[in-house]
Length: 212
Length: 212
DNA sequence: CGATCATTGGAATGTCAATTCCAGTCGAAC
DNA sequence: GTTCGACTGGAATTGACATTCCAATGATCG
Image 1 (cartoon, rainbow over the protein chains, first blue to last red):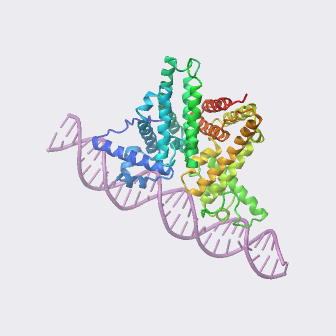
Image 2: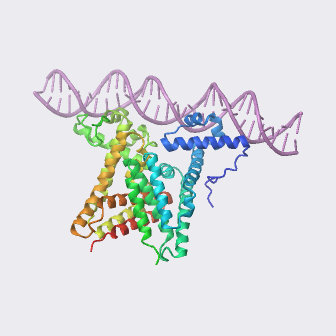
Image 3: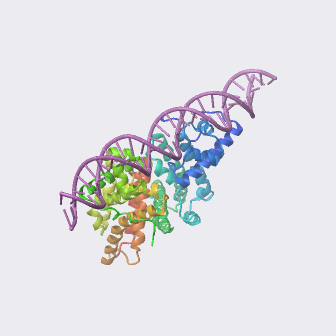
């Protein structure tokens, strides 16, 4: 299907021994952290070397080049971000759960003083137009995020808590869009207000489809 | 108050003669175009020189450094983007006008095959965390965008077409967030569907407050 | 017309990043 | 235990980029 290259997640290109896997992980973690705080373009390889305590050859050994490292960071950051929202993310099948989830996201922004924006969205915005392989990784990242939302809504619909003519696919997309846009505005204005406003509206819109 | 420097828009630092103003404008225009297509970090000064047909000293003469140029680009791009939405942007005081406005935005995305995202949002996402002066410019850019939306809603409210307990400030923010998030998703997925979904939901939510 | 300052060209400087190379060590499978 | 390939360190290479400098030209205002 795609001839774009290796899948983002698994790289079977190298046989990894135990210490190799540990080193690789350390590099990705350090890179993800730096890139979140300073952007991808604002993060240099030497900087990552120092933060991870590795030499240049190790980075190029495991990732080929910076593009490869960036793709690994996308994968890692997506997983980390979603893990941070679990277990609630996997049980978004009631209005209360949805609201609690949004509240937690708001609290999270407050904790970090609205700095940094969305771990995935910021990466995405900076990298969408780099190349098709990277963009495909981003599509997958958002799909991984949207799926649990959609499936929660689908369960609600199956139970009749959501009207049969609600399009759970669209509702999940809409929710994601509200989150992304809301986060961008709160990041810029350094206030959780826009994010709260956007997610509140999204929730209200979903409740519009409450069944029976 | 702020010692951060000059305001983004007017730079009274230099006396500009007629040819000077023309050159300055040519530089900003070329820079804005390149930065929209390749990102700010992905656009070098030499590249801008060539595109604008100027020498390095001219850029540094008019903008001091790259940061200064970027701030000018934010201002220019905001004005250009808003101008592209006029005159309808200044008459967003009916549900029909709002819908027509969103439709035009969708058509615009289709025309450019969902590439590039939002002229302001992409800049914003890349630049929010650079420094406070730049962030302040971005706050202002979004305010300039949000104001006509809010004022249109306010007129509707005054006429009774919008319920008295609708918060037009929040509704405008919500609309902007939906646009931003929707645009990011359509840019990534290369389909206008997410943007359409997000704006449709935003419009539906506003219509929820229809008065009488 | 002359002085002053805006405006330009183009070369020079210094820094730093991405990537490559080579040589050496270590782990695991046979 | 030896052999192959994974793993690591560190120096070297190459190139680009932001910024500065200097010397010239042109416009404006009195």
